[in-house]
Length: 172
Image 1 (spheres, rainbow, N blue to C red):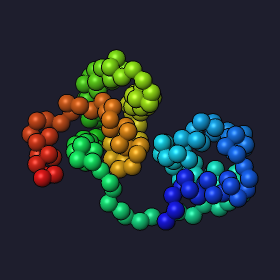
Image 2: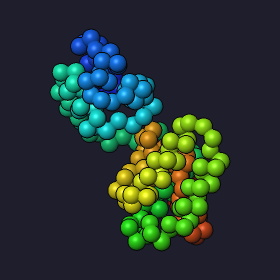
Image 3: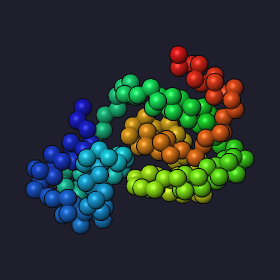
């Protein structure tokens, strides 16, 4: 199956549309389009559908279950965040507010450059909006988006030591 990035690049080439022109057609910044095409930013099916439509193409999506490629650290981080997701609901998010806010402040203070600051800002916006659904997506996503968001996760210290050890033991 061809990637969304490849499909859009091929459609751009076939329709002779540049990133700048595609930006003008869709209102998506040229920089964002460049990030999508380079695979540096996760692209939703909705976004891919809009970009392809602007190029005169129809989008068809195929779903296949594939084992993600994780480093040991990425797998550990995903498993720990998966456990946090199990506990996450609006009441839990409210109960965690003090810890998560403190962690966000530390992340803002200690992360100086991009793209980390943008990801911290994204976490902050999701948490302030109490957007449990999108927080879960960031916690669980096995692709680039999730890996990058978990690098600056504000959920350190949410799991008890026994929960944390249980998750780590399950990975052995």
